[in-house]
Image 1 (cartoon, rainbow, N blue to C red):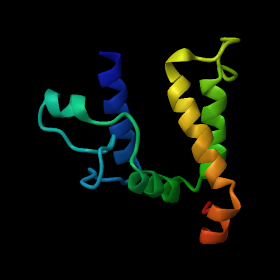
Image 2 (cartoon, rainbow, N blue to C red; image 1 turned 90 degrees about the horizontal axis):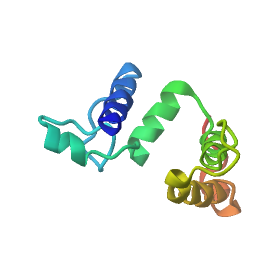
Image 3 (cartoon, helix red, strand yellow; image 1 turned 90 degrees about the vertical axis):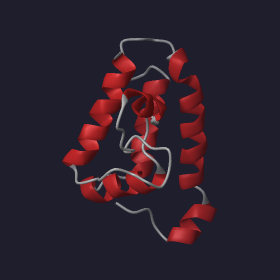
Length: 114
C-alpha cells in the first residue's frame, strides 16, 4: 500500500509542476486506468520527465544525485548504516554521478544545465 501511495504522490507532484503523462518510457509519470497499470509504473522519472522537472525547478542534477547517494548511504537519516533497501539504487546513482562529472559528458554538453 505504501509503495502505491508513493507512486501516486510522485505522479501528482509531477503534475503540480506542469508535467503531463509520459508516453515515452516506463516512468512514474505514465498514466494508468486501473490498478494493474498503476502497479507496472516505475517509481522514478524517465530521462525526459526528469529533464522537464529540472527545467521547471532549476536544480542541478549532479547535486540532486549526490544528495540521493547520501540518503542511500544512511547519512541523511537517523540510521548510522546504509539503507540496504536502496543499495542497488545508490550504486546506480554513483555511476550516473560519475558520468555527469566526467570530461566526456562535460565536453558533450558544455556545462550542466541548471
